Image (cartoon, rainbow, N blue to C red; front, top):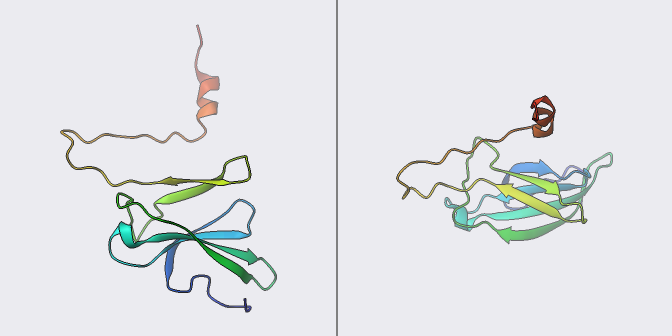
Length: 118
């Protein structure tokens, strides 16, 4: 790679850094539906200057993957065994009688300390 080169070769969005700071994950721009989009990872030498050392197609996104241009709809975390896991937003089915609500509780272990156990 050359210093100052762009990360994605054919457009990309929703970039997320891996925990080690040497991998940048992103979604390809292809198509208007989720089925045409792909998850990529670029490996980088942080430098200075930052330099791209490789790019790899990881997988094609499932059709039910919710894609928003104005927000990041996935996260990537180390799985403890040297790999990564993706947490992705899936579009609602639409066929349900009532919409389901999901709650994300950050720092939930702190809440456990506040509960009076009997």
